[in-house]
Length: 384
Ligand code: ATP
Image (cartoon, rainbow, N blue to C red; front, side, top):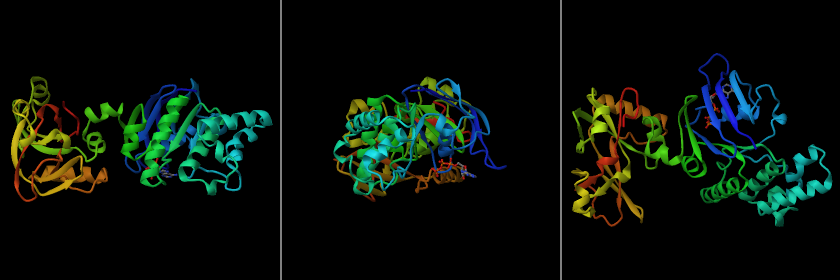
């Protein structure tokens, strides 16, 4: 196994804007790192440079302590699992898994031992004589991983391996990949644009935008302490709400009433007149369901409910609000970049499923103001 270090990696295709723009990232030995970001942010290009399928324009790629920029893919001892699994249809599962060992002229008895060990780990032993066409998507995925395991590769690289599967199988395979990676402890880099995969699989997640790293952190830290508007809007479903707010000392005035900031956050917003307040849907609650003691730590406001969605364990309510034109334009641009449909001049609140709020009526909501984030609308930076 090996660590993967990237130092100031740049990739330019032709004369255009770099697809990967000065990326430095250290992936520890045995770590599960996710590369995530919207379409075109450069995640596949980065992965392909690790594996050697793409030249590096400048910077250093160091695997297991050795600079590999000029090393051919076959000499890097990495194993890539593609979306379509790249299995040979005419070969049995056994031969598909054995394939890299045959190429390396491994003796038959060793091939047999390694294939059977991998098949045990992957619970494929009953299917070794089958052809890929007679396997489920999940089983094919495991065969592809088996091939990676027998090679005893230094690292696994996955490029959106689950995007061809239906939602149920995707969920199962996600759990399976997580379990296997933990069991094998192999350094893994996994590209996805699916934030559920990003949040559930990785030890750490690297969020990319337009070829640059926005934040590298554990899933929890990304969720709780996003460094900027982009990460805050990208991570979380339904997404974080961004409300315009004017500043007067420690008091923020939002379309849903005022928020008193603590000393530290008040200092962070000093000098700003207009801000964006970031509020996750679950920071809200139906005020009638919140006990009095808790109410004191937040703020309560009345707003008209547009639409409600009851999901069984919780319900969403959509509350429109007014925003200045400049903020509207900015939110629209951000929504577009994040591929999210709504224009975000309505807040999405997630409240208890027992709430009796009704569409088209006023309702009283409580907001846990301790948790809100405050963003600079110009730079997008999280000020808190
Ligand atoms: P997706 O999620 O859509 O696969 P991605 O984040 O993996 O996107 P890349 O495929 O790495 O993004 O592409 C990054 C940028 O580089 C994009 O703007 C893309 O158009 C460009 N690009 C990728 N491959 C090439 C190529 N062979 N020639 C020219 N430009 C390319």
